[in-house]
Length: 403
Ligand SMILES: *Cc1c(COP(=O)(O)O)cnc(C)c1O
Image (cartoon, rainbow, N blue to C red; front, side, top):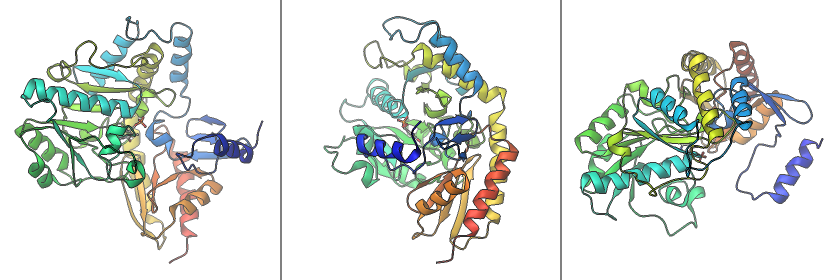
């Protein structure tokens, strides 16, 4: 078996440099714990950006994957398979929507929602094709396709990828007056993250999502909630919109829908909206494949069976309470909901260095922007493991000198 150093060198030599990972290699994983080739153990406090809510290699999800792999794995949508229907029925029951469209990645789910909104705008609202207008927020993260990066405000994600897709306008997050002012006769949708994850776990003011709901209903535009990162119990409820008891028109889902083992994404909406898709108008070779459907069913079942929303809510509260007690002169703010949290340091702080120190102490986390670190462990974390993590974070942060 190779050592971490030679593995990292190989990645850097043969892999495109479109990421800058923390220098740590994961060779084995179970639950919240991961291990490097040298046998060192770490608590995973990123959860693959919330794709591993159910924990690494959850036995029920792995079993579903193996069982399905022994039966049939891929049919394409040219034929039916005997798993997808059950999966979509259970996903509709879980989310409270009438129909679902399965894709693979989060970015594909967002692309699907954009196409859905544009078609709906023409066919149900009478907007002229080509004029459809969608409003998004600054500091958004919705994925990496050429359309999606066209409305990113992050220069790293966007620079030199023109020509950019027209038809989007960007307003500040957490600003309902800006939303009202931006809507025109051609506006078909508002696409928004109920909590901005990549922006640094930015939680909007209470009442924001209900006000967005009111405005979208009044102006007859679709409220599209991107729950790819915030969904599936991450924030202490099934979905982040549930905190305000709000029902969007469309939700985009991904990440934890694949239970940490397989890319599974979907868009959910009611029939009057989803009905604008007709045969040939959208699709994906792997979308809704039997392996993904079997994994998705198990991933949903685990969330319910193990009451992970409740767990996320209780343990997330404890994590924030304990983080707020840490004495570190450069730590300015602790924020989040459930087990989606961030610690914000002063502007000049090098979070990368702190992440290296956390790694050396046995905890893996990654900075978002230069001065923010996200803490989002798998939701199956035990109280014992959480206590260990808090002790590590405290030890590392209390050693950080003042400026
Ligand atoms: C991760 C993420 C996406 C993109 O998902 P991929 O599977 O990486 O394409 C979209 N929206 C949000 C909110 C995300 O966090």
